[in-house]
Length: 148
Image (cartoon, rainbow, N blue to C red; front, side, top):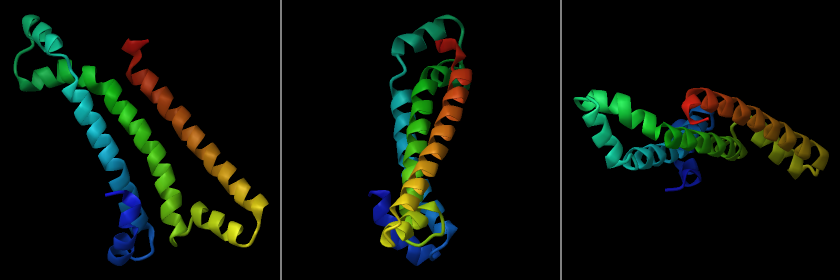
């Protein structure tokens, strides 16, 4: 179910407040992160697991910590980065439906034909996302230093 389809339920369950917006954002981010992690773990090579066993990796916890997590971390972090982008879209979408915030201000400005204000809000939102993305990519490079 697309997260935006749940906006009516979120309003009914939580009212028009931050809790409803957080619910929509969490649902939207969860599935992207879940399937990215699932796919990344599923794509860990059987040959890599065999090499790990040959080199002395024993037990499930040790296998996950030593082989599966490092091998799947690039895919997991890519899913998190994609989820962050979707969260920004859902923040604006949930605010359009009444939660106070920049999305609501964009709609207010466009309804009043204040194009300059609407564009300014969009640029601020874009800059905020760009800063979050740059920061996340820096963290990603630091965590995945072995890939460089």
